[in-house]
Amino acid sequence: MTVQECIRTRRSIRKFKPTPIDHAVIEEIISDTAMTPSWKNSQTVRYICVEGALKDRISKEATTIWPGNGTIIEQAPALIVVVSIDKRSGYERDGSASTPKGDGWTMFDAGAASQTLCLSAHDHGLGTVIMGLYDESTLTDILELEDGRSVSALIPIGYPDIDPDAPKRKEVSDLLSFKS
Ligand SMILES: Cc1cc2nc3c(=O)[nH]c(=O)nc-3n(C[C@H](O)[C@H](O)[C@H](O)COP(=O)(O)O)c2cc1C
Image (spheres, rainbow, N blue to C red):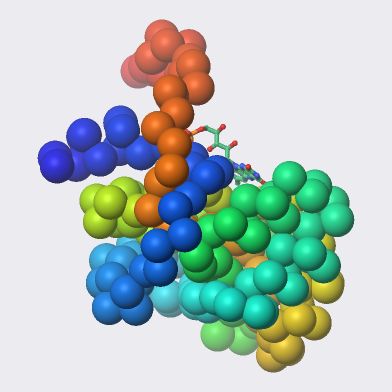
């Protein structure tokens, strides 16, 4: 698959086969994801691969904001929790924000990493969907996340059981302008 094919044929997958994912495959995907650029190469994004009873607990207890996500997580063989280390990306060593965007760069790095993860998963024949709708404090408790870390996204992952069409995209002329 070329990079362009990978970008263009990746879809958000919300229905998965029950086939488990070999942990070596997950490790390869995270090895690809580690190549994502980050603020001053600070590499503040971490990944927790959740399976089994803990995943079931997350699907039931941490998706009250939109239970549809719970249904998706429930039937995915694994859930990648994207975790950010706070106050490093976009910050100076003395703790002051490097730019007026403050902690915005933390989510920027998590977003870039999430896209790399989804593209690598697709290249490995796996489907993913990035989720922003989850109950953050419940999830933090369930995962017993240490202080100074926060959940930036959830990404259920598994072998796709559907082949959805691409949702319509805007035209390049709507997206791009040139200035000189
Ligand atoms: C930041 C972000 C949050 C999202 N949150 C959810 C979500 O909570 N649940 C869901 O089913 N899809 C979620 N999506 C997936 C989008 O709906 C999806 O990417 C979009 O409709 C385009 O479809 P495609 O990924 O197949 O191209 C999210 C995507 C992003 C980037």
